[in-house]
Image (tube, rainbow, N blue to C red; front, side, top):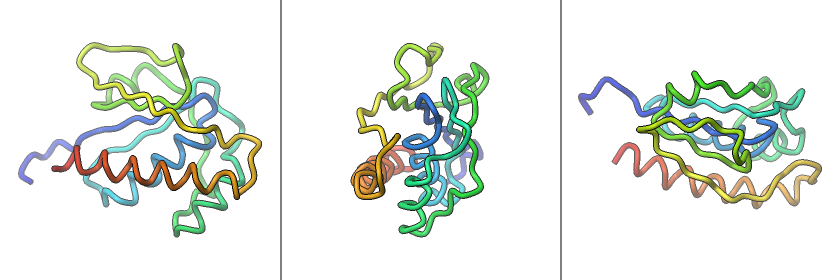
Length: 135
């Protein structure tokens, strides 16, 4: 691929502590640097959900050092694709961006047994997205 500009994806959920963290981690891991990845929340939590950290560690991805980040208009503006996961109207809309809304169960307050299927669904969607982005 001779295009030096990498596609850019922003994952957004309310707390940036579960779904968006898993999605960003999978895309970062699977794209091996070919995609610029961001995640943010409209009302970020204080830390990443411990069950999310645990289930991602099971597949070899370490989220223990990640922290939830606040959603900014700049992050949306800098991204080609914005994928929301339950943030509703909190996500600013800019012309020329591709918006996707992934309906996923919320891992907040759930144990690892409930979070694993969410993780697996996110991984499947990320693999499909990566195929679209990189052809």
